[in-house]
Amino acid sequence: MGRVEVREAVAQALANAHIANVGTVYQARPEIVQEADYEAPNPEYTANRFAEAASSQNGSSAVLIVNIVSDKRARRTLGGRGGQDTRIHKTVLEVYFACTAGTAVEAQVDYDAVIDSIVELVRDNPTLSAPSIVWQAGEFAEGVEHEQAMPYTDSDGQTILISGIVRFDTWEWIAGPQG
Image (cartoon, rainbow, N blue to C red; front, side, top):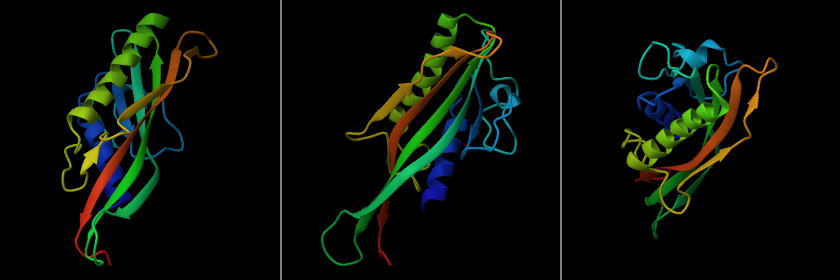
């Protein structure tokens, strides 16, 4: 287990969650997010549940990017080297949202629905469907936290853009020899 497996588990859980209006889920920040990534999953990365357009009737869609910004490994039992450790990964999801056909209020409603779905996924599925890798996610005092930037429009004023982040801890439980 480790950062690679945890990052994969988080991305896979998001991609398989059937979150409306989510296109591509990236396991790490890509060099360039293509416009098409908002609409349909990019097969080079972790795709969401279907290979068709992922936007709403308001033209709303989002791209998610998984970041692990820090992690800490610590022993949780007393005694020798063969104890039990945790490795806590500070996980931050970047949310890039665009609305091409709706009003500002409709865009905000669609954005809020994406965020609500992400929070619900993490709180209702604390192992992120990967219990051999993720011991707990979004639990304990840290919970799940969301922060949204102010909405704005693109240069032609036709697309409403909202970016945000969702933070939570993803825990591994490591038992046995600590080598």
